[in-house]
Length: 319
Ligand SMILES: Nc1ncnc2c1ncn2[C@@H]1O[C@H](COP(=O)(O)OP(=O)(O)OP(=O)(O)O)[C@@H](O)[C@H]1O
Ligand SMILES: [Mg+2]
Image 1 (cartoon, protein in one colour):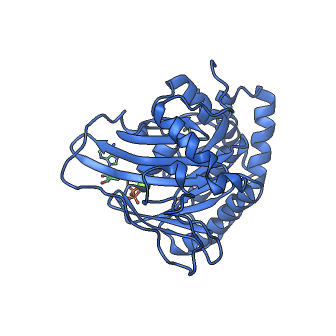
Image 2 (cartoon, helix red, strand yellow; image 1 turned 90 degrees about the vertical axis):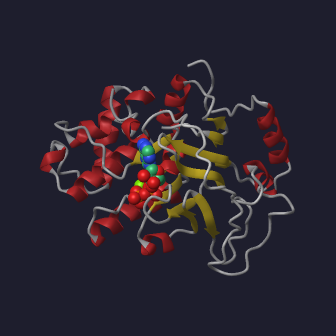
């Protein structure tokens, strides 16, 4: 690896601007550090689908954010960009300070391996491979020795209540158990950012609660967590809710007293979330952020997508 991925790089002109505004950002001065910064992020798929149309979003270290929106609104697309599994067609995506749009593939893989855990909408477990190895193989790219990987895997499976199913292969597990294996795989490497796409979508309410409890526990221990959900109850339990519609963020809800607005939709620069125009104390629950994203529907943008995000969906899970 040619670069220290723990240290953010600010290499382009745009980044030095972001760096400048970050230095003046009250959020940063208050000790909050952006982990996710989307600025004018667009994603177009071949065939003229503009799945994301100019999304601005900042998520700080330690936040727990629910991403909600109707089917087809761009939630998974956004999560794939945040997870660096796909690159934006336009705009920027910065993760832990690194520009995911320009980082070479190898460094992007390293960034993912070291910082990001995924729970996918469709488990993405390797067929015919035991639960233990599915989880252990998720740490392959992190360079952890095999024995330690397996120990951590067993520990993570124990935490999701599957300590008695280590040798079971996906087809020998229930849907809910598969999802718990996926959660164990996502958390076993101790990621600083956990991205979950409908983690409770296939679970009964009791297993769903268990999975949520694990994610909340992880968040309490400092991991930044973003959860896509259709379940308003799950969303309501999150301290922040970002609502997507037609590829645009239409609301950014924070609870009473949770202060900062401006990370969404207002300025086009994730780095200046605390600028005078956009900072403030939010007075009421459920009031929404400004839906200032533009999204002139009609023009289809370029078809410069880097391929089907889903196809790389299990990146990092096995060799
Ligand atoms: N690889 C692709 N090629 C072309 N269009 C795509 C591709 N992936 C997604 N889309 C389209 O982009 C839009 C957003 O898709 P996305 O998967 O992000 O939605 P979503 O909000 O996650 O929906 P759901 O809740 O149903 O999972 C949809 O209209 C979808 O059809
Ligand atoms: Mg989806």
